[in-house]
Image 1 (cartoon, rainbow, N blue to C red):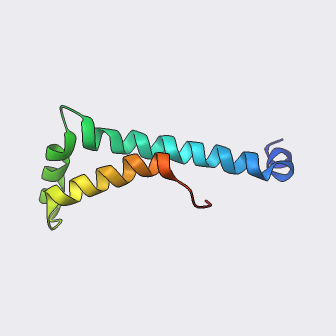
Image 2 (image 1 turned 120 degrees about the vertical axis):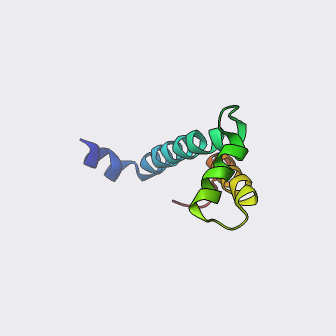
Image 3 (image 1 turned 180 degrees about the horizontal axis):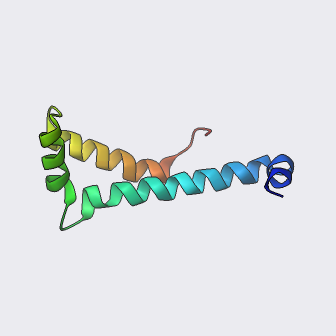
Length: 77
């Protein structure tokens, strides 16, 4: 059944894939930016413990990319 749906409506399957990926990215990016318990400071500490250079900058960049990429995906999947 799924194969016939994808085969007959490729744009619908692309839309479903984009929505799914968008929700996943937003769900992972939101706490890195806006969580009171974790937020950029907590994620920066995790990155620091992993040895990532410039952990606070990296925390903001990763959080912004994950959260806003979920809503700004314009290129084909």
